[in-house]
Length: 382
Image (cartoon, rainbow, N blue to C red; front, side):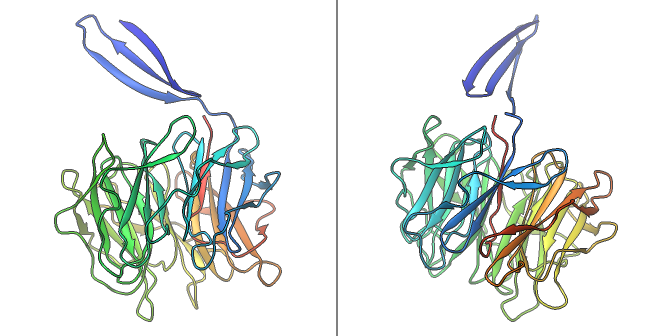
């Protein structure tokens, strides 16, 4: 048996294993820098950055934080931050387009990539990086569709995919996005439905999935998350005057079509995330009486959710976005109500690896300068 190691980018390589029969298998691995950073979109066109203590889960502001999103105004200020799977680049959107940043692997500091903002017709609201780290997708306001880009693996700069932007429903505002290596899911915050696309693995081009959009318009689509196996999608409708809820869907592995899981909807009205193990899901709620974070265990066969022991967990007055770190040890919930008016806060928890229960981290909540938005990202450079 022979082994061939090929570097493909900083901190990452492929290992090709060849047996005596000549059969081969290729595995891509990455070596972490040992640091982890959380990036939080805030009002006032800022991105707050913190270093995560990998032992305790505590947060320390990154030097130079918060980092500006030049010229960002209005509702796009920004809504989401997305990072590539190698922890090299961060992306966010505004009415001007998509802003790209390089991530300093040692400090977590952000540096604007030359050429930013990269044009996005209708602006860029939801932003996501596909799990392969090759493509960025940005959802726009007012029916402008989905803008698609290829990532320059050296600089982080973006190049539009031929055919971009790809059509969405006229009048839709694409608020949140999630991707597998094969499919892209985009939440329509005007109607509450989910638009699904197949991703061309070579070009990044998008093709609508048959039957898309999925779901029954029940209000405003707020968040979407896909489990690591790509089997299930979880979507939150905030209600917009109707009853909010967390809806679970199974994903057809061939077509990408969504089928609602029995038992939906579950409690949740703002953000949703699935942990890296695919065992647990967490959803935030706001408004009386939903002012907490709801923890669930995931049935890995059906995608159905069961409340975790001790759920719901206290998360302040108005929780929004939620994230779990790549190790699956810690969860972070953003809150628009901090110590002072106009401030926000981040509630940090350790995750029980058996039950999914949350325990507050010492020092939590950690102060934010301004109101946080939904799309929080955590990077572990490698």
